[in-house]
Image (cartoon, rainbow, N blue to C red; front, side, top):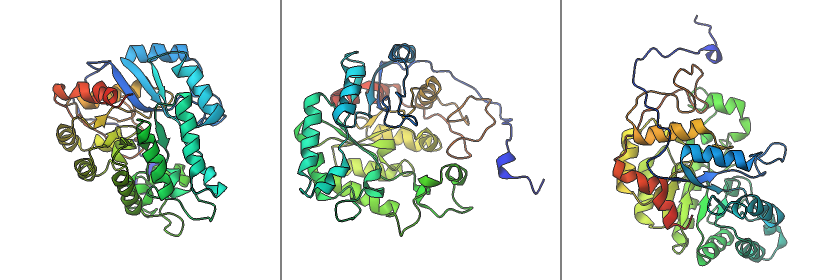
Length: 350
């Protein structure tokens, strides 16, 4: 047994505990972080083959509206708007991106602003900035472009002038920047996705450098609502996210893709929401929209169930996709739920 590989260790949970099924939230929900387009599809097809089936799933789950972060720009944006927003008014809100390749035009970012203006005119409901900014995007001179670059600041400011929110994903889980060795809590996940590791300081900035750049971006754009994806881009440190919210009244956080992180600190998360009830928004980042993911998140938010799998069924013996731990419910004050599920998103125009 001393030679049993970790990959073969699949212990069956013998803990006896309660299980609460939360099929629907108490109010119609708005998912502010999801992907419905072709951008993240391995073969370039729509992530959602049937919009009719998707609407049925959302109705069953009590989801009123989904923010689709896959608009991109030009014809791709038009295709998403045509398939979702215009065909089903009130059910979808598609965000655009800007093409960072326009930094190679040598016009100091003016083409980026023109692209955003065109996307807004077409009907984009917000701007999505992905993690490649700060980790991979380079300008005409070959320099790495960080979130606080002046050309990026102007784009985010312009979004605010249009009255649109900016949802930004900066960096990635902290462990993705740690040494790739036996101390890394996400080692198994990174072994399966080696391109998610950003720990080589000769190639990538540190996590702390990127968070500093994000804060400087938010500080430079007081007229723009900024939603930090994945629990403010720092789900492992809710106090840091809370400090950002205290300093910058325009800074918000969605919950997309981070149940594994907030679920192992449920009491801290409950205090975080209570301290910032108007800044936390429902988001799943579960694409295509997955009933299990929604119901796991509902269960976390509304119950005090203990020690259950964050991305599977209760009897699941496989380790979690993000790490070998389980989660417990935050049992939020019911009075806080309408804002988190719906009202905060409505206030931001989503």
